[in-house]
Length: 420
Ligand SMILES: [Zn+2]
Image 1 (cartoon, rainbow, N blue to C red):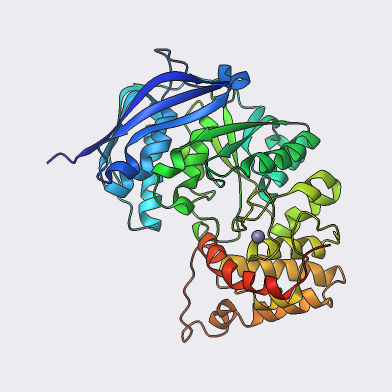
Image 2 (tube, rainbow, N blue to C red):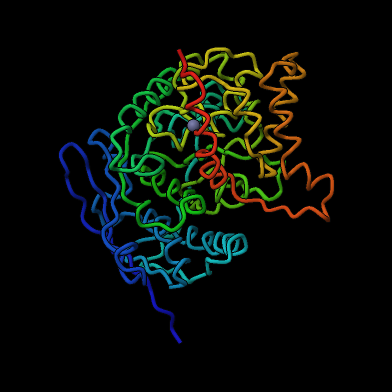
């Protein structure tokens, strides 16, 4: 018996003021209003000549496959793209689905088809690439390493970065403009330029921590008329075997399977811990003053200084000897560090690397690192390592952990002075 299908029909582009909207209609999903309707990406006029979709019969509609694969897997419905799709992407996505269904049982492997399957054309190896950039340390590190040609034969020039309004900052949140300005200062200080893109895709997807690599791949491939490679800055390290538990759905194992023959998706630089990445800020004072790591504060254009992610980043900066923490709304507080719950193995390992670094640099006796040593010691991860049989050890994904513990740590704000 045939399974029901989700259909994606590309729509004609639309001018919206000084933006070009590329659009598609999604229909057939059983969660009617939440998953069906028009999905769009809006690109500023000056970059519209680089978009893959220009209402031409030769257009490649791969961006819509990347956008709709998670909703189809969530429903267990087959996916039909009514347009031209790369045969190589269709093949890769079969393997991608096997990985996702293995990691998370709520997603099923489905059939994906297109009206036209397009064979790849031989292209020269990429020398420049596009990067998603929202001002976080991972993307700063990736941009820095490539622009400084520190990646050997894998170094790329990155002439353009994109900051998506509608992903980690919702479309309705006006703090995007301030966050964009912070990110733009960093990107320009490293010799690239930053473009905004607006989209409602996230509103139509299942759980973001699992889906976001497909959303990043979709927006990167939107520029495939100009670029042949899009970089996703890694938030994990190769040393962890269960990588998806540290970085949500993004991992070196799976992200590359969102590539086609003509447009490569690269999970970039999973070779360094956060404290190692933080060292580059010594050579990049603009990034030091403008980086943005916080997901949970009231103002998403800045860093609350209270949540675990902010504490983690401030500890890394202190470990490498950076004292300028003006990017954070509150100073580093040892009391908050001591209370920081560390229940993920990946998070524990990264914080332990930070502590090791601080000790080797002669900073391990400061009260913040004494507090960090305590937080690591009392963590259920440490208990599980001491007694792996007796200690039950739940290991939620890092992003969920960050959100749950932020409110606990925020209560301490009222007892602390704000930054001067
Ligand atoms: Zn924060």
